[in-house]
Length: 461
Ligand SMILES: [Zn+2]
Image 1 (cartoon, helix red, strand yellow):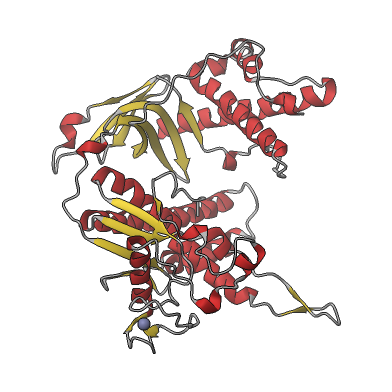
Image 2: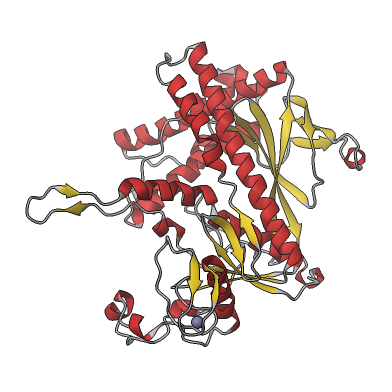
């Protein structure tokens, strides 16, 4: 089965080494197509979906019936014949269609790579209209018109995106593009259209200089979004909690409506709008909070949290005698998990790291173990559960907020990575019992890791 991946017999040229100073960024702009243009865009989306499904069917059937592994090259070679047979496909820019086949290849490659790795991936699926949202101009066929002069302060920011075989679509360029545009993807989100421009640009690290030398530890949480080691608090906007009721109501409205009916489509549009609004509000908050921290402080220290593990479902509990399931607190944990995902700490640290790189600010991550239990004043262990919001140390008489104490401990861990911070009582933890490296030694995770945008990448929340 692994033979399905595209491996041509001829030897491939070694890839040229990537320029280490080269960075990639995505700019997303809102499009305002006329009704006619929107119809064209939607029509192209439907045709792309059709090609995608046909390509998937060809690959599946050819292998099932004849054991033939169809490759990208074989499918791309059929495009001219398809255009002859179905002349309406001539109205689509040819590279857009090629890109659809590239997506198919990518889906198949990913599937077989995961199978080879022993995972259990789902087979690439046939896409319905509601699962196919975008098409891409991978090389050319697009141009941005009338933007430089229109980006003046307070001036109109409306430009045009010229798309081959579609026309000039109104686009609001709310910020200037820096770099070379590589690809252009047209995205349909509910009833709105966006252009996503992937841009390559050169980044010179020697030019980045941060005026501040102030270092802060940051403890992220649910009660407060973040507490800094200097006592500053970023409040939690609880974004999805704000729209939760509306989303629930929209789901209730959609549920009984007949699939494909106008009323059903209207309810779907409303639901998409609510989800989009929530997403945009969260992104807005995260970007602004990250920007403020990066502008103000020279070094930001975070905990290296395992968010996937933190928001995992609790294990079911069984009664040994009867085999019946006992309460395991799943409902309460479900509510906490919702808050954890809503907070999007992973995205936040990733945004901080990527903004920090350009601003010449440092972002570091330290081991997260017992940061809220250890006293930042004397290093003693002061056990407390989640409900205790105040840290009072019996050893050094330190009195401060629980989260601020944690933030200070995080900063101390960054400044003195050599200090063993594990309390003697905690020496024989499960981790060190299993490992034969001896109890009481500072675990490897206590090393400070320098965060880069890549190392901070977490799964989409
Ligand atoms: Zn203390």
